[in-house]
Image 1: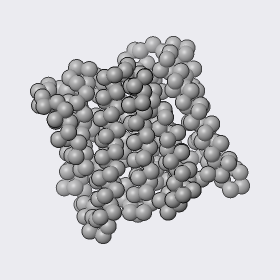
Image 2: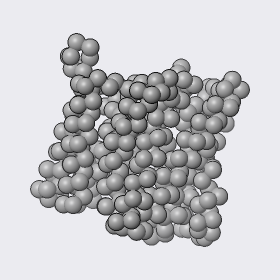
Image 3: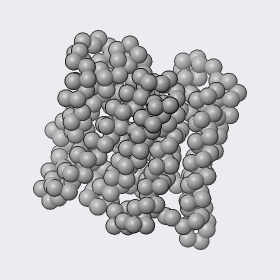
Length: 305
């Protein structure tokens, strides 16, 4: 069971990055700052490259086809980040991340239609359970206890989950042929290339990026470096866990991320409200907990089926 305690560190670190992302969007990139934050994250992916190279110094012995495939994964990851930040800007972190539980559902649907994979009754039931859980959180309870659909969260997170599912399939196929470290190296390298492209060719983002560094250099750089370091450390820990246990079991631990995000959000709202504020009234907590539990059960059933 040592693999479980190692693997679960990843979702905890990812949960911390969710709240740092929210802090950056609300405090430092409040106006038109999503593209700038994507630029920051892409460029800071360079921090992982030396460590990934040391983990496997044969990273350059990879086929051109697989290199191209991982470049596509890098582009998809950038799109995941963009869509996720759009959703996060419009709602709470504890709400946004629940939609990531749709990744295996979308992956299963894509496999059925494009790869000819067969879905058994348990898998279909599991997917329906996950969809039910995300449906519950798709409605916001306002001050008058009326329900309204979270349009600004649902659409970008459906796109993010779709891009993630497609990228995961490609990444897994390449990692099985090459290895995890090579795959992670080129995935992060492509993100750096995307960051350089945005900086050179997208003037508005470049101007905002340089202005952000000039005006709040210490705080912004510290938070972004911390954020990317936590995310990359999470990736490395999860990648290591892949070598200790079956892939499906390790992926199952990712269902703990919404729980960590909610707990951290409640803690920060109570003790450090200047950092973040989540809706912690009973009706909101109950809705989130029910959605997390239902999607968690669906994810568990999906991986054991």
